[in-house]
Amino acid sequence: MHNRTKSSILRFLDILPKKIGYTIYHMLQMITLKDVDFYVKTNESSFYQIHKILNENNIDVKNENIIEIGSGWFPIMPLIFKEKLVVNTIYTYDINKHYSKRRILNSTALFSKRLNISGSKQLPSFIKYYPHTSIQTATIDYNAKLVYSRFVLEHISHKELLEIHQYLYKNTPDTIKILHLISPSDHRSYSDASISTYDFLKYSETAWNKIQTKFDYHNRLRLPDYIKIIKESGFTVEYLNYDKVDKTSKKYKMFKDLTLHPSYDTYTEEEILAGSINLLLSK
Ligand SMILES: C[S@@+](CC[C@H](N)C(=O)[O-])C[C@H]1O[C@@H](n2cnc3c(N)ncnc32)[C@H](O)[C@@H]1O
Image (cartoon, rainbow, N blue to C red):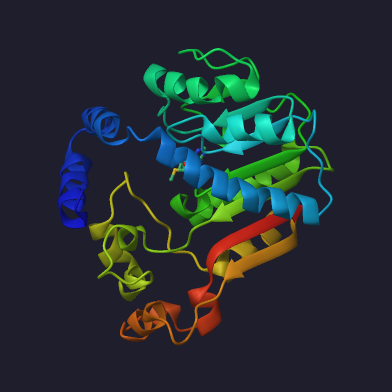
């Protein structure tokens, strides 16, 4: 769907009463999100990054419980974790309920041979799904070795991110590791090549809040903001990597053509440009 059409639809849904807005939003997601194969491909590529980071940091999750923040639309990442790393149970939390019977069936059918499970509208018993549950209200009454999130943190406010990490600090074992894959880019640039990856940084908070809606909220936080929140919650950053931008690239030129909002004046260019942020935390 074209960006401008999508934005107009989301802005319209945003002004409807919350329940009606969400119902129509979910119906639209049902129609537009059919491609489970694409979802598998992109999740597999993220999984390889996760696996590499776990290996490099000697973290073994075999037979361990793990927690996913932000389940999303298909239970693909939990299925990949079960297949590739033979984890015990995956507890997955989402403030929304995006899994549907059809999406569960599409996903389990794809992994039926790989995991020796039946393609079913029910989740396998090793995936415990908690929709309508924000992680900072979850009852974590089981032992977990790893918490991970993929493309979730950028959609959560600064205040809530701090609460989440403070809650995890208090309610998880001292040996816990937390791995976040964060996409700090303007998501509108994914489907419109004419928009810079950093376009949204030209707006003031007020102006940006008029453009985005609760359905496509992006906090626009930069790398140092995430690190500050994490340290404030008590966690230590054990490992960090992020993409740098080639100064001869079109991406860099498009960035240089922007006039950033003065609130970003305090950041270095590298801090602003840092993309695909991967953060591993420990206590
Ligand atoms: C962009 S989606 C990513 C979903 C999935 N991780 C993926 O990679 O496809 C972000 C998801 O995080 C969920 N989310 C946002 N805030 C959350 C919170 N505080 N706790 C749990 N889930 C949250 C949203 O409802 C949404 O499903």
